[in-house]
Amino acid sequence: MTGFELGTDGPGTILTAVDGSITSLRAGAYAAGLARRQHAHLLVLTVATTSPLAAMAPGALPVLTEAAGELAADVQGEARRYLEDLELTGELIARQGDPYTEIVRLADERRVDAVVVGASMKAGHRLVGSLAGRLVRAGKWPVTVVP
Image (cartoon, rainbow, N blue to C red; front, side, top):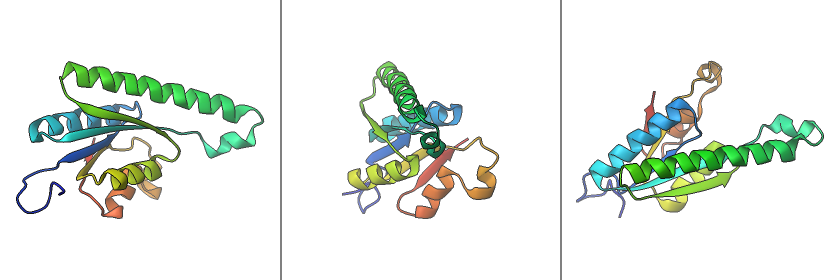
């Protein structure tokens, strides 16, 4: 049963994606508080990603892939410490690839009831669309976008 079916009053599973940016960290904190108040299961996702342009420079892809993996591991460590400080249980999940694709895949796999992400700080996203905007348009789950 999902959290929005008859007889329940809130999400049972909340997914948040963090990448180390200030807005994603705020989103993670908001999701943790929501999970605590709703007694919901919290999934914290980090996605290691590299630029498609990296493949164009000889030797750059392995170095950038390793750096992306290290950044994701650092963010996971911060998330783990934060959950421990709040005495919250949650699952920390690391994936590699496109953030939108991996968020959607995990949300579908785990049948999440809500997704919490940070707002994009990039000016270009106002024109071409942000990750949060794409998730909202997918229309599969309630999406909270934290500034």
